[in-house]
Image (cartoon, rainbow, N blue to C red; front, side):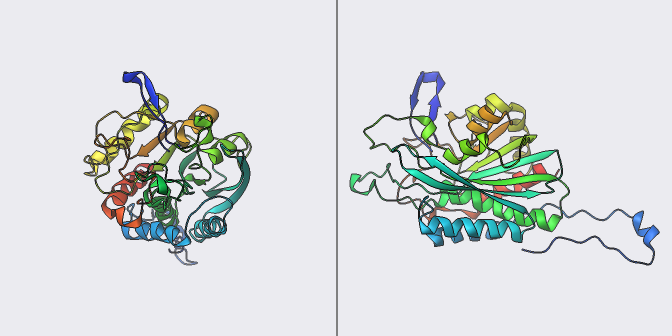
Length: 333
């Protein structure tokens, strides 16, 4: 979900929510010499065209809403892409209950690099799309599904490109890329029953109670949410500061050093009840949310958030690149 809390005003407003691995050179001749030669390390790269392709591909499947054929097809494709890029993949089936009592057949998809490593980094995003465009100005459209180009597909697109690069890098780091499901099935604005923040991020809450590996632990986590729109501003989100201030500072410093200070702005944002909130609260894994927070919109988010206009034409490769290059530079340093 995305629940935005402005503590300074002391009130809460419900919002929201390709290639093979590099092989080490070996030879029966000159083995002893080669053992003393350090192999060159590839400079971390990020291809925004590839990330954009991954965003577009998700939208081609249609609405990624639990309990639909399009949702199942997308899940199978996401798992296959992670496998293609060298990850060990687990698809975690999760039956969760929506705000209105509907049982959702959700799927969390975990792709692990070097799963035997104890020292781990967790990168994650939600892959489902919202069934309700409850921020549509025209009430007749509020029960239509949201395409979810930025809210959902952009974070997944960046992480799939990161997976591709991790495979090319033949990284020796323990990294888990997790696509959480049923994040965006939270209580809609038009619902007349009780509203509860915990109706969001259902797949994440399920995973936090039943992790894919017993006693799983990561050194830190990075959530990507709405990371593809033109003129995005990534403010320092409140729960990120509260639970992982040093990680926030490091990521924003990395972005500035790469020339992306116009995206990763030195401003404090509100408190967003997003996937990272539950990872911090329930699993104590210090996690931050890289999320587009705006000062010039009524909701505080991207202008097309939770509308039928969250479409591919709103995605900007420059923004995808700023986020992707910042994250891959930081995790592989």
